Amino acid sequence: MAEQARGNPVEKPGGPPGKVVAVQGPVVDVYFDHIAHMPDLHETIHTRAFDKRLVTLLVAEHLEGNIARCVALNSTLNLQRNTSAQPTGSSLRIPIGEELFGRIINVMGQPVDGKGPIETARTDVIHKEINRTPMEIKPLKTGSGDVVETGIKAVDLMFPVVRGCKTGVIGGAGCGKTVLISELIHNIVEEHDGACVFCGIGERIREGNELYYEFEQAGILNKVMMAFGQMDEPPGARFNIVKTGITLAEYLQSTGREVLLFMDNVFRFVQAGAEISTLLGRTPSETGYQPTLGSEVGDVHERIRGSISAFEAVYVPADDITDPAVVAIFSYLDAVMVLSRERTQLGLYPAIDPLTSSCSNLNAATVGQRHFLLSQEVQRILTKYDDLRRIVAVIGIDELSKADRILYERARKLQNFLTQPMFVAESYVGKKGQYVRTGQTLDGVEKIIDGKMDQTPEEELYMIGAI
Image (cartoon, rainbow, N blue to C red; front, side, top):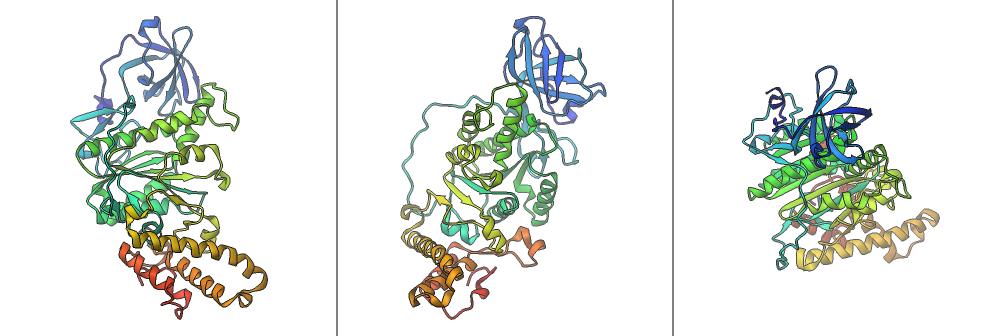
């Protein structure tokens, strides 16, 4: 019953126990007397460290000599050779149910928020065979009925969020990925009657702690389920926490809700997979990543379907957008918001660069003719501004033609107007957060493009809500 109290359901024994024959960091080899006693892949094995702590292992490979090579989901400190290891006869199961709202669990479904055990009527396995039968193709809905308003001007204008799509928030360290993701959660949960799952993958413990109290302060904790596999945990936990988060989202989807799945950070999932691959002795690919990179990223994204809308923060190592891990994640995304370090340094928050970002949902059939034409005009003005900026840096603004100067100044006003004070960053910037309706954003952009704001100093459009 001790395991149950910790949130880990007690399984029926899955055959005779084996014994630990090698411990190499988070990789543990378990020997079984007979090949028939070998546990299946992804089956869990329970063993105990010298200090009586329960260690959960996940079978990753079958080796010669009746050895199951396993990846540990928690620390293997004080785990000794010849310790008995009991197969559970099941893949890793986590509790699912309404009781998980406002709670934080780890990869094994155990509560880590200090609020006591989670008692639920149901559990579910996190490793599922992906149904590769063709999905039923439904006719594409036109109009804006499926567009989710986020209240963030830059997102609603250039990257409309459509239910069931996958949106990537790409950027290097310190560009504001977590702040943007947190603001999206805050605004969508406040304005729309949906449910959220936040999956923290290999990020800082401090961020998870701050996020929890921000949700509590905003009064939206009762609509959010959280699963964390943090930086200090073994790679097995950081790799599999994605599947724990998706399992929670699949449960919410089965209840008929609109589900928002936020993952921060998907690159850490790939990174953990590379660590596991190296520890298991697999030969890395030419770029140093695991040879199974494509299939691992694909398996995760194929499970995100139906009414699950996913927002994924993606760390870009050394700001290199051509990194193989980033490219592999890119191929599954419907919209890509690239956060620019240059815009961060200029104080343009959110620091989304519309010229390097893209969105397949930005078309007249989805958002309407007016919205589409305005967004294209903004793109044209900012592209021309990018060229003029280099000229101005050399010869000064006074040397531009009158038409170019007007366009240059309007572009700067557009840039400033697309900044916004955020609710989750109030304590950092000292400004109250603003929620801006899509109609207000379009009206403001139209006024700037049409020249109605030409007499307004650009500073007055910086960090405001609607005009």
